[in-house]
Amino acid sequence: MSLQKKLKIRILDREYPIVSENEERARMAAEYVDSLMTSFKEEYGEQNPLNIAILTLLNITDEYFTERDLTSEIIKEATERLRKLNILLEDFSE
Image (cartoon, rainbow, N blue to C red; front, side, top):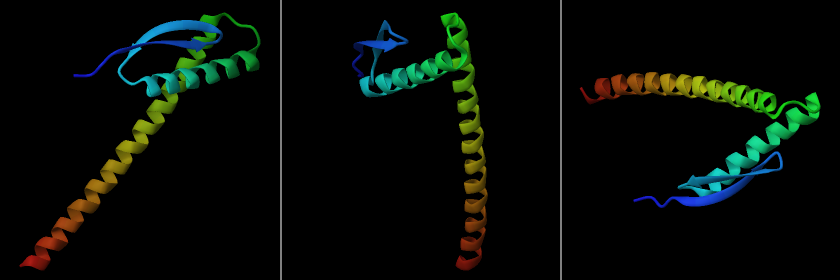
């Protein structure tokens, strides 16, 4: 059974209480979100925090889709290589 831990994280100088099973990952995620939001805030000036959050969300979503597509392609390539290797092994064992 996983233990939930209560944490306080800071994003754009605001503190948020969260609950997480993995404190290190939660803190890393918060630091990443904070760094992106800070970058957007610096790049676009003082904006509504919701606008900064949406820009950050879109950026993270794009990164996720890029990684997901790359992972899918790697899996397809590995599956094809394994299929070819299985054919070679079957031919060798006959």
